[in-house]
Length: 165
Image (cartoon, rainbow, N blue to C red; front, side, top):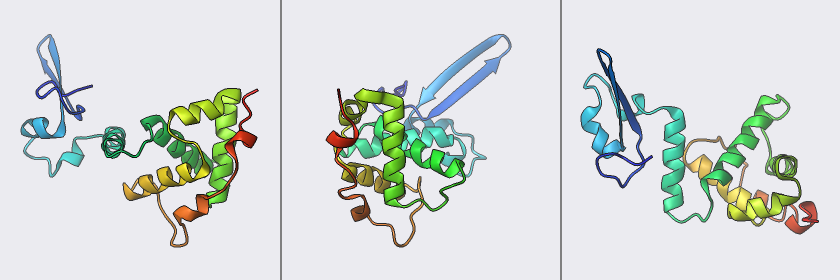
């Protein structure tokens, strides 16, 4: 949803006003909406929910030409979260994550997995690594000292693990 003032940036501040029987909803980007933030708020992050912040950060990164869609970032983030929730992988390695991503893509998209991933800009395991490290750069995933982008190189061949017929 775009800001209703500038109609250019993503709306990050959502204000609902109730006056008697009348309810109004207004939606502003962080720039235009700053003047509507209550003065007793320490900073804008107290107003923006975590989900909105994640979407905003991902959208901003995409605008800087990563070549990956928001869906790609959400897919990787969900795979990491799912692995951690299972309790089996608290400190997941790149190879373990690649396997989780492979299994999840095959389970969700079946024979369409390769084309779905390609539609998001993911064509090889190195792309998963770039997405992971982008999420790390934004503080949305944690990194161990030994973790490197190169750990995602040559994980598997998409043609082999995602057959289309």
